[in-house]
Length: 424
Image (cartoon, rainbow, N blue to C red; front, side, top):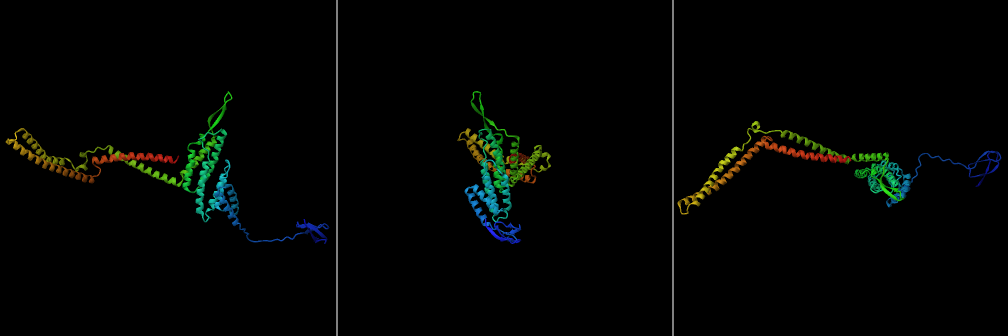
C-alpha cells in the first residue's frame, strides 16, 4: 500500500492517504478528499473487435481433430470457434455430430443435436460454398446413422439376466430416438430412403417381444439351474415402439421417389382393371351368341366353298378315269400271253393311260390350287368388308378375350401384392 500526500481542501491540513482508493476523508475536519483523478471517456458509435483470425484458427484445429478421430478434442474446439462465429453452419453441424459420437452410455440428448442442425440449415444459405457443405452434411449424417445403427444390440442373443434385458430395451429406445432425429435431418433422398429402410427392418421382427434372458433358479438340493425366459416390456414401451414404427413408415411412404413408384403402380393397376372389364364385356357378348348364316342378312353374299369343291371334283375326274383304265389294262396284260393280240392292245392302253394319268393329275392339282386360292381371296375380301361377323373371327375374338382376361387378372394380383408390400 502506497501513501499519497494531499492537502485538505476544507481546512488546509496535510494528509497522507492510500492511493489505491479513489476518495478519502480528512482526519481533522472530516471533509471528503479526492485521491485519484477520474478521467471519463465517452465514445459514440460501435466498437468492433476483430477476432476472425482466432476463430479461423480454432476451426482449423477442430477440423484437424475431427478428421483424426479425436472427437472430444474437436468438440472443444468447435465450441470455442462458435463463440467467435455463431452463424458458421459447418461448425454447427460438426459440433452436433461430435456431441453424438462423444456420448457415453445411453444419455442421448437429441434436442441439442437437432437444434444445432436446424441452425446449420438456417445459416447454410449465407455460405459461399453452401452446396459443398450440404453434400458433406448428408454424407456424414449417413455415416453417423450407420455407426449408431450398428451399435444397437441384437435381440438374437440371450441376455445374461433380466437387468441386462431391461438395459437393452432402454438402449434401443434411446438409439431409436437418435436414429429418427438423424433421419429427419437428412435432405438427400437416397440416403434418407436407405436409412428409413434399415430402421424399419429393425421393427419388422418385433425384437421387443422376442428378447430372451436367463433366469436362475435354486433346486431343493441346493443346486442352481437356469431357464430361458422372454422379457415382458410394459405397455407404455410397446406403444412407444409401435408409434415410432408408424412414424418411420409414414416418412418412408411419403418420400417423393416412393410416391412416384407407387403412382406408377396405381396407373398399371387401372390399366389392368380396364383390360379385365373389356375382356369380360367381350366374353359376355360372344359366349351366348349362336351364329346362323341363314338368319344373318349380312352373310347373304358370304363366299361359299361348295362351287369350288364341285369344280375341283370335275377337274380331277379325268386323272381318276385314266388311273382306272391304266389299272384294267395292266391287269389284262398279266392274264394273257405276251404273243397274243390282246396283250399288245392291253399294253398300248396301259401306256396311254399312264400318260393321261400323269397329265390329268398335274392339271387337276394345279386347278385345285388355283380354286383354293380364289376361295381364300374371296373370303378375305368379304372378311375385310364385314369385319368380325364370321364364326371364325368371333371365335378368335372370344379366345383372345379369355387370354387377355387371364393375363390381366394375374397382373392385377401381382400389382396388388406389390402395392401392399409398399405399406408394410
